[in-house]
Image (tube, rainbow over all chains, first blue to last red; front, side, top):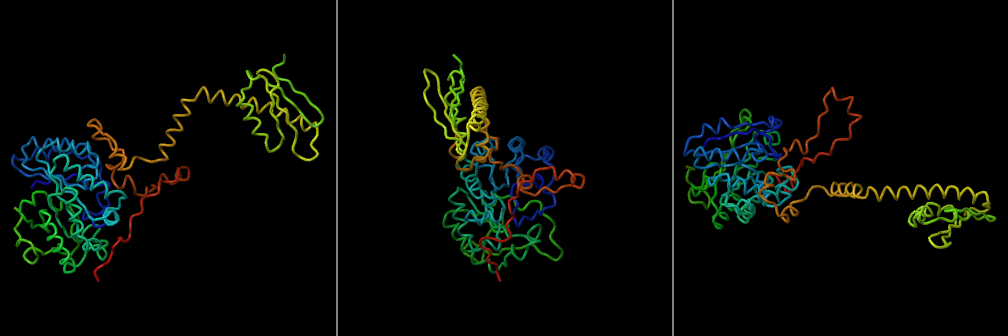
Length: 259
Length: 175
């Protein structure tokens, strides 16, 4: 996966954002032309921010990556701008190989918007997913598991499914960036998350959704919808990455490594 | 025939007006301004002529008071007639300003409004909800620099930022 990093400007201000506040004021003038020119035919590409859709050139960049022969073009996004149906159509027309990795952090507006810091963002993201489906763009949902969401993961699965997502990715809140600053109220203990995560995985499988937990996906093709964590602030000294062991212990299929 | 005629009788004053000179709406408007201070009666004085009779409301008001009030009424009639002409001449401009003010007060269209719209491909990159603005541009407090500190007093108050929530709706913790 070739990551094309667009800086950290974002229209959300997530409480757990691993990117922190450092580069949030980076200049808007981002030119990934060089990175796109380096794309090899058959390669997978991920546009990652910040939030890629705040850049006016995104559709053109997707088109350029498609012209380079990229096999898969993932845009990691909160999906809010796709609430404009015409914008979703414009992205879909840029490449048939486009897939969206859409962040959804709650099953209700208060839960999601507590995490994003933006009133109205839940309705926009859900509408963005619906519009993506209507325009034939494949989309997965990434949910960062926090102390405010871990008891509601199965409900988030149902919202994602209803909105048209094909798979869901549960990512642990990493203790870096803003989550490091507010770790006690952001990062849950893994053993408390596990039963809820197992229930959510079972619900996803009942609904026919692919599931990825951490870096493991089932079926393995579900992982093709997700871009990974992207650029983050370094972990503080002595802090390890959080893992969410569920496959092999829960109702999953035993887990397969993402290809 | 005089177009405007003023008569005085004891504590009363009467002004006869030609409707070609002062429209009926201008007469109503001017009379309204004096309701607190006068008793006013509008009468038909002839074809295209209106008579306004008035007397001061205050106890002990005199003919001199009525004369002064009649003078003020004449001035107000002129002001009302002129304002009315301005309103007619600039109707389109005034309506445009009013429409913009109302639209501004209503704020940008919400998601429901957008869903009801038929947005075509030519508007694919428009952003009426301001979704594509970074969080900092849209909500963060502006930090005044030192050089601009003196100008701060002259600047309008910055837009109130969206409060960054400090506790989750179901921040149940794990302990």
